[in-house]
Length: 444
Image 1 (cartoon, rainbow, N blue to C red):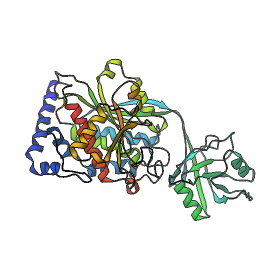
Image 2 (tube, rainbow, N blue to C red):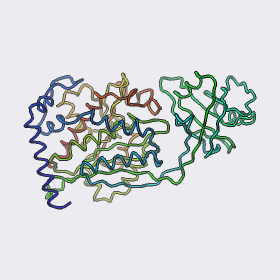
Image 3 (cartoon, rainbow, N blue to C red):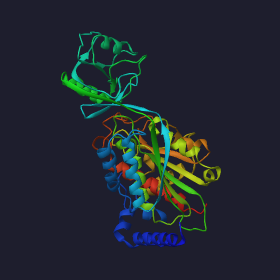
């Protein structure tokens, strides 16, 4: 980046801070007691330009695109690529240096039901076909004549035998559905079979299983698709430190933008993704001694593939520059018992990210809601921890522990309407924004 652009960014940063300080309405908004806070905030100077400007409702507009318009964003498929393109456009519009990082991912096997529901398809079943036929629920071990019909099983016995039996009785497709015996609902899945079969076999999410069972009869149109030779992408947005003569490292704010099959992923992890976009907007002109980097990972749901690829490509000198990774995964659920904001480091130890978020919570009055740090992996902070870097995942979970997720986690019901709290998203924005800016603006 040239000197002219650096100077322009410096003056824009100064103007941004001055605008907040000079605006009484912003100052009042920032110093008032926060929704859900235990006390009036005691902000430091760097908190004001962040807390006064972050807006959950602004982030919600991005979430409407990702969750409502694009919907399920399956790693490596066209749906994830549409989300990638949207993220790139938005971050470029904010004048970040944006790069995309491609990496290969495994094939996907998906199904469409009646042009409305996404399900998983078995790779052992017939792929690239469409079947339209009446469905019949097969229950209690009874196996009627299924010639020309779709066999519909709910909680079929484990193994491939029920599927093979239905095909032997003439079924032209097999639909497997699960209804959980616990509060947690079952998600769409790709059934595993012991051998190839000549008809499509699909796995429905619980909510769709329940709807079919309640419907009782009717026709289904099932289409299966094999997605081979897939490429997923990380989206990386960089902004250098304000002062070109200093190089005190990089602070990263991250999330994953893909979802599991069948889920529009409003909370997991559309919420973390739009948190990154909103903080990129708010922090873009604020003066920092460290560079800012927003990273949006592809294919997290397949085993942290995007973040692992990113870390594997980092040269040693770049690894040493990273001073903190704030990973945001499921930061806005409206599930009532999920009232605890968890600081989740891989080893349960405090580090620069957890310490800064906890300190921000104390300044803002959110400290009674913040728990941890406690030990938990299962998100994109793990590859950074494995390199010895300060990193943690931040997430709303149940008071009893970070394993207490909302029952509609990974399901088609993870929507804005059913699973997003603007208040919790606002708290997440303020905590991560204040913490990341504090770390980025520090001299060491």
